[in-house]
Amino acid sequence: MPSGPLLVFGPRSLEYDFGPRHPLSPRRFGPGIELLRAVGARPGLAPEPASDAELEWLHSRDYIATVRRFSSLARGDPRIGSEAGIGPGDDPPFPGMHEAAATVAGGSIRAVEAILRGNCEHAYHPGGGLHHAMSDRASGFCVYNDVALAIARARHDGLRVLYLDFDVHHGDGVQALHYRDPGVMTVSFHESGRSLFPGTGFVGELGEGSAAGTSINVPLEPFTGPDAWLAAVRAVVAPLAAAFEPGLIVSQHGSDGHVWDPLAHLSLTTTVQGEAARLVDRLAHSYASGRWLATGGGGYAVYRVVPRVWALTWLAADHRETPLELPEPWRARWAADAAEWHEAPLPGRFDDGPDLPPAETLSSRSAERAKETAALVRAATVPALLSVAEDRGWWRFEGEVSGTWSGAAPAAEAPPAAEAARPPLGDAAPQAATAPTLVVPLMPAILDRTRLARRVVAPADPEAATSILRAALLDGATAAATFAGEWLVGLALAVPEPLGGAGAGAGVARLAALGVAPEWRRRGVATAMLTALIGELDRAGRSLVWLHTVAERDHLDPLPRALRREVAERLARYSAMTTSPAPARLASIDPDALVAVHPHAAAPEETEAHIREWLSSF
Ligand SMILES: [Zn+2]
Image 1 (cartoon, helix red, strand yellow):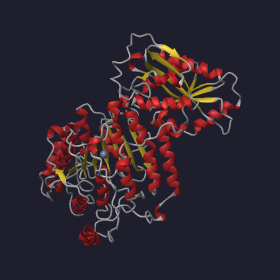
Image 2 (image 1 turned 60 degrees about the vertical axis):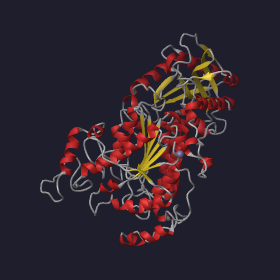
Image 3 (image 1 turned 180 degrees about the horizontal axis):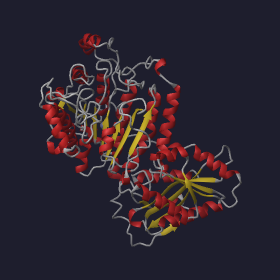
Image 4 (image 1 turned 30 degrees about the vertical axis):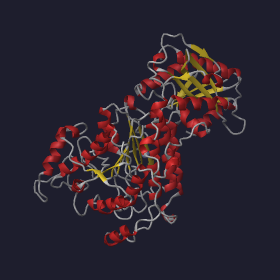
């Protein structure tokens, strides 16, 4: 496999042009591609139009016909009206619009095909990222949704896709086009829809039916700064990737969240935007066998911001350190253009300095809100075992490539860790005919002689799950387990929850995981484990609390949303737990969230109040 990412750019990339006064201007390719060349990137794939058949994977035939019709009209033609989102405003028609938009789509589709064939691990398409386009209408400068189509291409090969969107605008089109597909997880960080186009992307948009929990949104208030933004990104993407088991990551690196961007109100820096790209690279190597398509996106500070974020994204994909200074010839070449477009002076470095963002563009209230929102999204969408494991230091995402950014290690050698470590597919391994054995309490030493079956608990990689389980047991957790021969095929795990301050809640445990391997489901295994776990906790004087959200599901074959709640309710009832609705904030985004409690018979009176207080923190 040739080393280095594939850069997608060619002469036809410039054809996507809404006119000289439009903010999404092909002018950006001048300074952008030149800076990419200056850091060593060379275009390796020149986009050509996607076929109609390809566009029809996600766009309606009528819509494509409408775009073609607009495309054939000359500028100023009196027949130009408004239809399907095309018209005066954000998405004005232009001659050749169909071919130009299809070319952007073609670039992203061909890039994914290169990755699928193994021609490259990573590809970067700076002209891509048109994430607002819908099935039957243009929106927000986007005619055809190249990123959603790239995802669809990978889905045709059966790959599960994790989509990460860092543009300041909600990735609404990609979310909508894959909203019902449990094999696509979309995660978008953006300025809140209350203050910015397209007005969507709220935390409650979680996905539909069996796909519930695969649409994740982290809306941020205006004047959110770089630290709060990056903390929000870090709070959710790694555990989601660890649980979801993607075969490909597609990301959108719009640079319009930058404090200098004229169209929006976040206060980010190139530094954190580059950090986000590096995080995605590490996720790709750790969880997606290295397969990663990065795209550009929005970005309207064409000289001061866009080229630097493009270069930083490329450098992340090329596993290279960020050089300090921008090349002097590049600055000299673009200084006058920048001045003409009111973007002078050009910055001196790739990363922004400590003077950015200026204090007056930051809101501490927005930073606080970002933290709360990320915590809420995490509570609803990250499997409890992973968030508890991270909070208690049993698990931390490190990534595979972080230590090797010298340019020396070829990307091709990064280990497809997850693939190699997995036992032969869980479906075949534990024999469902074997009589299951319930083991309570589970002692850590047993884990050395047994293997955890797939799809019992998150994370998806059984080795990682085993190491979390071992750490939990050594740290005071209690577990009931079901074995079939040497295979651990079911697990109920409770972790002590120090509620209500020092000592007061020592008698309460949280159910952090409850799962059964596919072959062993619907046989009462979960009820038996939960009942046994409660018995074990009873003997230790502990009550049990279970907070069940949309995050708790079989990631490969999730049940429909309502059925998941039904199953949880039934399990709780059979195990003598009392169910109640989830805390208000959590319930407002996940209406099927459920709380179940089994109070210890001799629990002190204040236990219930402590439990309620703990729940209200979600
Ligand atoms: Zn990489």
